[in-house]
Length: 299
Ligand SMILES: Nc1ncnc2c1ncn2[C@@H]1O[C@H](COP(=O)(O)OP(=O)(O)OP(=O)(O)O)[C@@H](O)[C@H]1O
Ligand SMILES: [Mg+2]
View 1 (cartoon, rainbow, N blue to C red):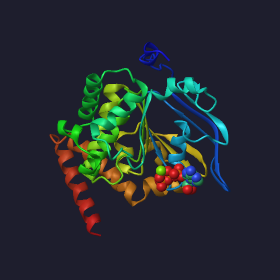
View 2 (cartoon, rainbow, N blue to C red; view 1 turned 120 degrees about the horizontal axis):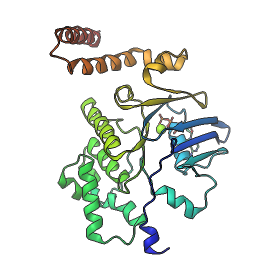
View 3 (spheres, helix red, strand yellow; view 1 turned 180 degrees about the vertical axis):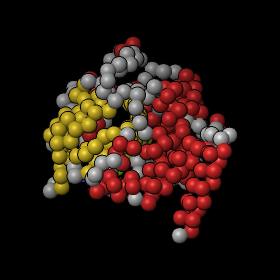
View 4 (cartoon, rainbow, N blue to C red; view 1 turned 30 degrees about the vertical axis):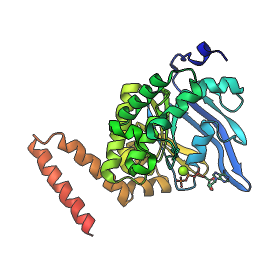
């Protein structure tokens, strides 16, 4: 491969569905994780993916990015089949997404900056050292980390900073698609909310499409345009949170309308109301909701 080919940037995808999953079946021995699963992700949306632990969210993500070859079905990214693609053609797609894996998976012997440089070296080996370091530094700052984090090792970072470092690496190649597997797991609520805001801002400023696996109800309410629910080995629904809450499915009802679901909804209502604190009715409602949630916390 010559250098000009390697540094060639693709036209951005302008179609409606950058990710299309059709008839996906994944089995591990006797266990069927997915059976005839369909999903379409819209360009420019943050799609939340929820489901019980072990329902197959991470396996779905791995199937989409070509790390898990399914038993049946097809996965197309930017209208190209990931499963039947020739290796060279796959490369053309693989440098167009970034992934933050569940658990982060930074290289512990490399600094944050060097971690971000890894995909740059892999896909653009001809970029000069100084430029590559500069790109990495920019991505670290873009992810909301301070300048000095570039030279730190993962073991010197807090959990929230590690997630941001993982995000910086996922953004290294200016992706069009961003895959996030449980990005706010293990963060305190303030750190999680900050990460959510960052995800939303990056989506808006960089025009990303985001595939976001999460258990975090606040995240679903705050930043997801639509949410896909995995249950019974399929995607049983894809819709906005308010529309999902209307559905008569036991898992969905328990998840969104259970005590934790309602608390997340109250938190979101409070946020909205606080934007209108000049109105007496909003002040009154905020006080009432605050009181209601603090009584519940004590109960
Ligand atoms: N490589 C593998 N070999 C065998 N079984 C696997 C493999 N990867 C996943 N599984 C099984 O597939 C099922 C789905 O796993 P997956 O990791 O997708 O769940 P999940 O929905 O992401 O759960 P969690 O919310 O806990 O992260 C589980 O039963 C898991 O044990
Ligand atoms: Mg998982």
